[in-house]
Length: 210
Length: 210
DNA sequence: TGTACATCAGTGAACGCGCGTTCACTGATGTAC
DNA sequence: TGTACATCAGTGAACGCGCGTTCACTGATGTAC
Image (cartoon, rainbow over all chains, first blue to last red; front, top):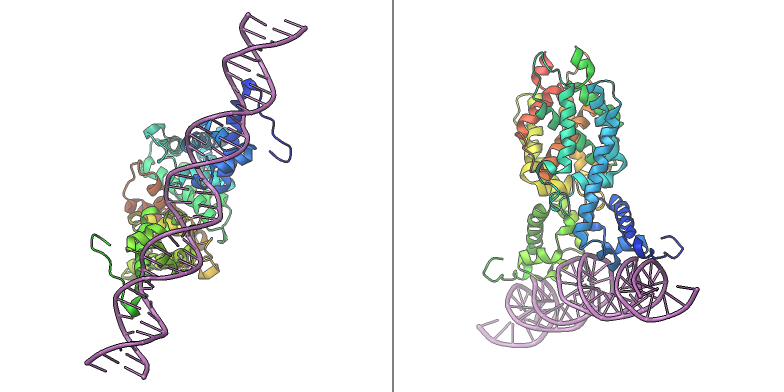
């Protein structure tokens, strides 16, 4: 990597290249936003290695992308949960989670796109989306739970939590994806749009008390 | 096309193949949802013609896709405007427009994706997105105008129309794109979600009168 | 009415390219004796 | 302490494939005389 020649790993340490490959592939995938556009040859070049060296660690390209996608889902979910962790109440936790969602998607459009907008070589095609084990479904489950906790537990029933959750998710996803795809539009800060929508959906502490 | 051999067009009618090419390419693009995945060779085969015949009508693949995208944008915009045309009042017009948006995106996921989610060989990369001339921007302009007409013209000012329009657009786009990408989720009817969100954003006739 | 000819709608073969993957190999390195 | 050897981390060349595009061509067809 860089100008200096790469030294091959010592005899017992060959497995370390596997980590290097995943790291380089992750960087390239984030730039491209499309696993099809990331070639084995480019990953190999980024690692300072020849293409066949990659086939020693992953049987084929699909296996590599699958591993990578699981990592990315994990990172996304963790980022959102960490953001929500320190909140004082349930609605503030939901708010922080939503803000983190948009922030993550905006700051890492390539990663986000691969997780939630990919068709070819996306989660579905790679067999990652298996019911509840689907990491995307897990992230949505987190969001849904956060919505439920913020809703009034008794009193007059609002819209069912599942429907509110889907509405909110559609908005968050649409905001991230549209912003990435239509940068020529003059977007207001994502934070403001998220706060506004949470208010309009009745998902704020204020809305709860009133 | 089909089992019977294709007869080449008569001497003056060569230009008709151009239309056939666009029609076949449109069908393939709708299936693939990605212009990269639609090959010149596949289009030629669908027309019952050899690949070089296509280069006689379009200088290269980009030109073909560009022409196609303009057509698709036009069709999308027309579908929405026609849906809104017969409405009794401005809020009903907005509602019909939004329902048509989701219906169009759900019934034709491939076309929709190419218009609003493509990165490679999408509107931006093909130079179709030039300010106000951008057909996507035109469609969004229609939506924005519909939102403005539905808002109370006087009385207490709600959120600015531009922001409401973006919120609404993000929701509609997110709904269409998520549904297409996560079919394993049990989605409620799009119509109900759209109505619910319009109500929560205060964009219904009822909301206006009250 | 008949014929020579320019034009037109394609064809067929080939090109250079980049891709993922295979296979036999090589040379350094740790280990067993 | 020294040496033979098995193992390991890769390399280098090649494969078959599908792609968009080029180029010279062919054969039917309308038109001019």
